[in-house]
Image (cartoon, rainbow, N blue to C red; front, side, top):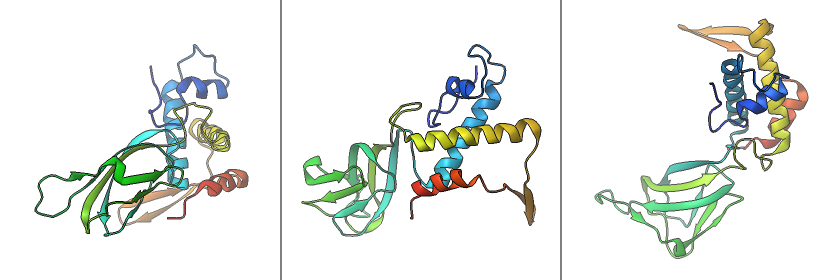
Length: 196
C-alpha cells in the first residue's frame, strides 16, 4: 500500500478524504501519494521552510562571532553544536550546552562564553525543526488549506492532462513552466516565504 513521505504535510488517508475517495479504496493511493509529496515539496521550495518536524544537520562556516543563524527554524529541540577548532584537529569539539542559548522561534544560537572559530565548514549544528508532525493541528492551517487546493489542482492536471503550461528548451534539457497558481494560493505561500 502506498504512503506519503514522512516529511509530507498529510498522510494518504487525509488526502483520500479530501478527494472524496472511500477510506478503504486504495486503488488511487499511488497517484495520491505522489501528488501529496509533490505539493508538499512545492510548498517547501516556494516558502523556503520546513513545515513537518524533522531532524536537520547544518554544516556552516565559523566566522569568529558569537551568533549562529540557522537556516531552518522554528527549532523544536537543539541537539548539539560542534566546532572544529583547527584544520589539523581530527575531531570537532562539542560545545557545552551551558555555553549557548537558542532562540528557537528565530533559529539563532548565541554563544555567551565561546565563539565560532573561523573556518570553512567547521561548525555543525544538529537539531529538530518544524511546526508539527504530519497531519498535526500545530501545522499552519493556511498552509494546510492551500496545500489541499494544490493537491486537487495537481490531480486535475494528472487525470485530465488539462494544464496550460509551456516549455522552454535550453541545450538538451526541456523545462515545463506551469501557469501561476490562483492568486490566493500565491499570496498565502508568499506570506510564509523566507527572504534569504
